[in-house]
Image (cartoon, rainbow, N blue to C red; front, side, top):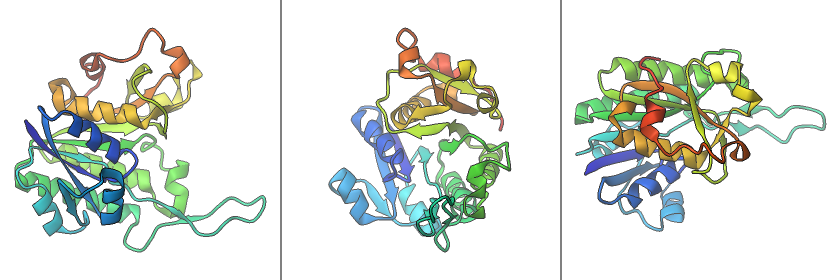
Length: 255
């Protein structure tokens, strides 16, 4: 049985990962890290298996990672709209103080990696975003946060850490059913530049969560970094991804 800590465990994707891991009681002891007690109770009914605190606090991470052999990083800075835009104007975004991408997606991830290494964690699965090869990507412009730039720097830090890694860069996240699509992997945003058959570069959150779980189980996912999208459901009727070893065998090491 693997003892696994999921950070960002009350987020929309993080909560799905934690729930999936907790369904596999013979394989995982799944713990969560969250900032909000109220949100953890709302989603999971109680605080059993939770540590409350911030990824910016070393003491919190040290406590949460005690005895863990794996870590799943699902933390991310979240931009907020400054004010409702005027008609015809684009909305403007900002980040709360101390919650900029450099704080959360870079330093916060470095904190988690360092704490995991000190705790003897053997494998880190980091869920990021596609688009990190393009500094002009619209997500980088939101609040002038350069969020994808900082995410990619943290990914390189993980690769250089010496801990076994799996870096999953998801496409646009959908709140739709999982397990009914063919999943596609790529590298260096090639899927963004040239979407196969012109399909949307998106994927259901539930499918991302399942790939995380399978990555924790399958040695073929170790020391790999890849982009991840799905075909539309109507184009996947005969090709739904069920063999995750086959999917991971198409991925490669390095950033």
